[in-house]
Image 1 (tube, rainbow, N blue to C red):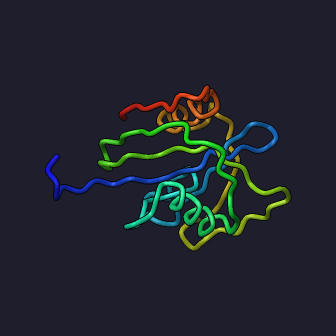
Image 2 (image 1 turned 180 degrees about the horizontal axis):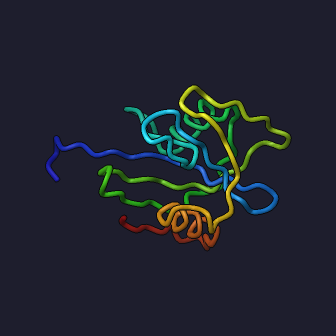
Length: 134
């Protein structure tokens, strides 16, 4: 990679409910896919700052970041996705941005293979940050 080449990096939150299901948001654009809260870093942001900003924008609440559990390369997007274990504040009420149509908690077995791997790694976090390429 040359000095002036660019690539994408994003930060995403794995948030569970009491039943161990994963919070996903449905995009209001493109294929209206379901994905983890979070998004791309802006110039000058750290991965933690981007996650806080994205979650506040998308969910209307500030999440508690517990730990970075994995960094995953997605060839389709030429992007590195940083995955964090997070929590919502007690009694939080979600307010979606215009970028999303809906939110829902999903059981792990219903996630796409890529999401399932990232979330499973997050749930099994043992202090070692995982990585994989998709």
